[in-house]
Length: 285
Image (cartoon, rainbow, N blue to C red; front, side):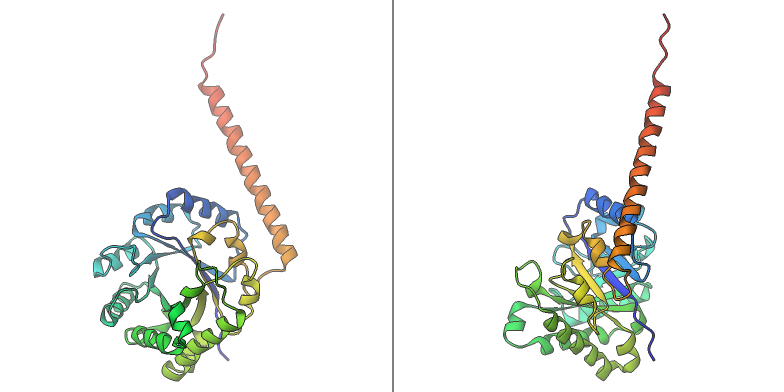
């Protein structure tokens, strides 16, 4: 019997992220609580590497972004080595505006420098409308598979671009059917071992209101969420996995974490006041 796949939630900031956005999310993640059965990864643009590393909790992974339209000149070994040198252990890859050869080369380079890969396979509204889901996803999977030498270091993210910030919502059935297509492709082309152990996550219309229902799906192992969802509600998505705590226990833990945060802020305030009193010169009459 295959080992259970660990739930993973990836939060991906866009290129316009500001330092205070990263710091705000870092505070939310530190306050928690975070489900210990869920792996959390935060994707950042190159310029945010150092700041994210300094502020995000140690248990949170950091991913670099390659091949996004907003990133410049990242298709080189140097750029892929850079996140590894900074201590990042993930890279997000997709085929936006890239040839198959370039994408495959990025996969090989990432694995060479010991990065783990979030391989994004995308479906547009036109693909869905014309019934090309199977064709476009399988083509992208074939490109990734041609360069992957170790599937244990790969997470596949299905991106429903037609359900991302469009006002259109994918139904649970549509999500499960597509994830099942991806897992069946893995089983038919890579074998049972890869199919049973490779994590497949969903990126699209994911919210606190539907993440728990989505998390119950047989072939779903997590989520990839974008910048607009990286706020306090992100915790609900992180804690949506099948092995999450009960809702009541989660509320109790959130209350305890908030109490600890308030206590810490009070201590910092009193410490600041104490320093100010020491710095104020005494007046003698």
